[in-house]
Image (cartoon, rainbow, N blue to C red):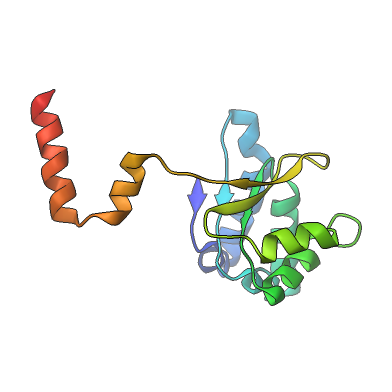
Length: 144
């Protein structure tokens, strides 16, 4: 399950409770929950929200953190808390990441920068107008 603009969904207490309980169980069913935000400060908006989003983050199996501003990096460190946060080098990598680079956390020991590269088809989805893509898709479907 992918929750874009996660904060919008969790402003409602019922939705927050749902996401909180779901993220604690979803892996048992071979599922994944991917919360996404462009403003980490939203996750610190209240103490209840901070407590729940911290629990969601800490229960995450994998994390991809793309470039953050200095203030957002500080907010992320607050969510992680002392002892579980990011060292100076990791913070530097995150705040200076180029487009397409991310900081990956797979476990407490597996923390590394990586580059995300899209294949040609995905690049085309984001770089050509809808009319051209629609014609290409129709042509491919007729060929099958």
